Image (tube, rainbow, N blue to C red; front, side, top):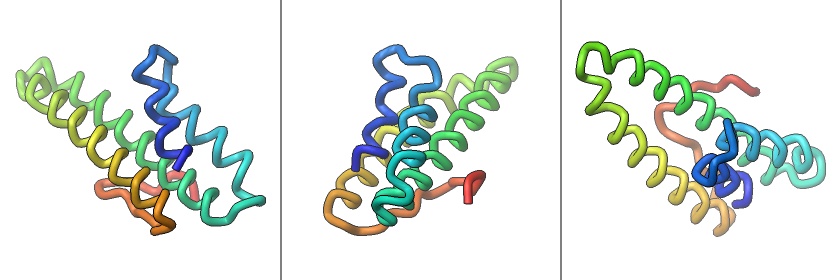
Length: 104
């Protein structure tokens, strides 16, 4: 659960905290707790994907559609991260939607 919630560190001003938080949790817990490590890897992959989606949306602001995509992406990230944290807390493996698997 903490791997998913650590992504919110970006909301308090930590640059790339949405990636650094899950990365730290993954590196610390991957051997000790296999479930926690797998969930941290999922959170890491999702937050890397969302960062890339955000950069693409910023680039698309020059063609106006990015102004629509950025708020939609923000709400999507918030809702899916909360769902992942709740399901992980219940012991259910959560696989993020629209996520590229960078870390395997």
